[in-house]
Image 1 (cartoon, chains in turn red, green):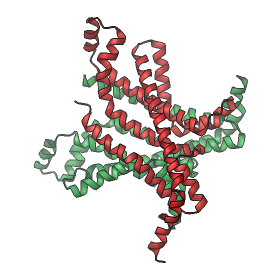
Image 2 (cartoon, rainbow over the protein chains, first blue to last red):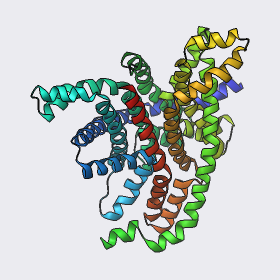
Image 3 (cartoon, each protein chain N blue to C red):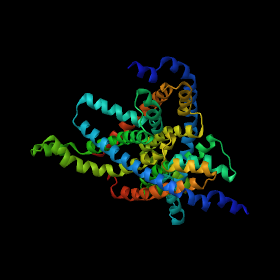
Image 4 (cartoon, rainbow over the protein chains, first blue to last red):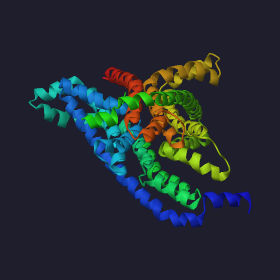
Length: 226
Length: 224
């Protein structure tokens, strides 16, 4: 065997790849489910917090800012470990999926709240005053006048942040979640061959590369106009 | 309530675990001092070369950046740590973290610095060149100082993310803060050490988060 053959035999071994392809695909399905759950709940929770903050109730705002700061300063992996290994001592044992989902959703919530809030604040005060003076209520002003403008501004930074946090689904492997990386790692140790890891790497690129390229387009389309 | 205090804020365990956790903190600081400059250097190289007018230089660089933005850093780390030995290259956990961070965070810093450089009007470079400065000189003395100032909040925000990301080192047995805390937790069967690590991360990084919020708000205030 030439050294090239040895290399392909180790890293791109067709037999091993064929055997573990179903595992990697199952991992992909789980990663997609987890990512969808994180994105939907994280963005929604962030938007709700930003709207609550717009009400301007002082003690509530302090609480929101504290929670947001907390999850912006804690590494997601620390939150996952804390939930998965810590909470059982408090009598609540979340599964690996729930732990990973909860922590990534909380982190995304924090970043999304900041971005939504920045969008709301950046809408000129005159718009509020004008809308209110035409007889719209607070809620109506927020919903029909402020949010449509604010959301447009938030699209580019929100997309980038969401991608960065969603890639964190790989962290689930630390708490033995069977997503792509977890599947690939266990297949690698079972077959004593790194080909499954290469498949896992390819699977991430298949999932995330189109999103990153699309984000580039979104960034130029909805960029903050100065 | 008593039970929760016992398992999350246990005084005896906290006292016993403190030296272990602090040793981890020291390594987290050292690791950050290594990977932040490394990532900045990688990003600077990417951003400067991305200014090239030659598409044969620009396109591969853009593909490189997108590749590492799409690739989860943990996967990169595991690939280096567990995959490379099969090719006969065995790197320690520390070296793997350094390389993975250079590639991953370099791509992010690169995008930020590129945006900064592109925010400086071309006329400035032309003026600098016409006074006799070379291309490199006008980049170093004219463009970069202004570019960095323009994207300072983004650079700081990314640096915060990099410091948080050093917790991935725990997966490849680098004895940083999270790793040490988990060691202490698995010995004591008590979550207190992990709570301690979380509190330390929060105390150190909270001021940075506050500062960032202010910088972002100021940028917005200047806009409207």
